[in-house]
Image 1: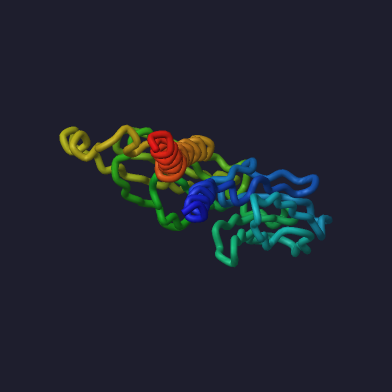
Image 2: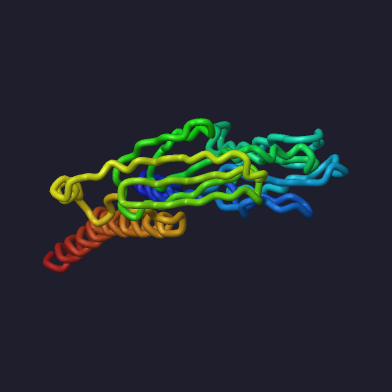
Length: 247
């Protein structure tokens, strides 16, 4: 029983998952945007004389990383996939779009690399400009551009999000439309069953919640262990002592 209890406690503590990747950087170069564990696509621009760069990846706990180290660059766009494995299972991936030489930049490009909407799997494709999503409280949206000096205008209303993208040379403009399906107030009230419904948590908040759950369960297990073993044994000893005294 003691071994079972120990295994249960260890199993609960293993629920705490550290970030798969703590940081990604390139020597003397800048990631666009700055690294964030929730952002999966980045742009890097180097001059035409840069033939080799070194990608530095700081892994989490016991993760295997591929795609880091020294990388040889060809002229133009170089796409590097950084993949994160744990116990031979792919758990995360990041993409670096590294452009060598400014002459290779497509100044008439007017699309985005990625659009991310909180709590939604948008199934984004750069050449698809219309999307439909369900209503979400406190909706957050983010995007990644192929080049840093593109003009992007984002507008958000109650039932629609528009992202207007203009090419560097201002010759082409595309607009991404995300239509938001509105729920009736009555439906929203009946569908909400707890204070956690449709709430977005940061990685730190999730970790605190996991730790709190684990501590609570651990305390319950310790109390059970006390009553099943320690108190039972103590009562047995007291009963024996009581019997001896009466003899």
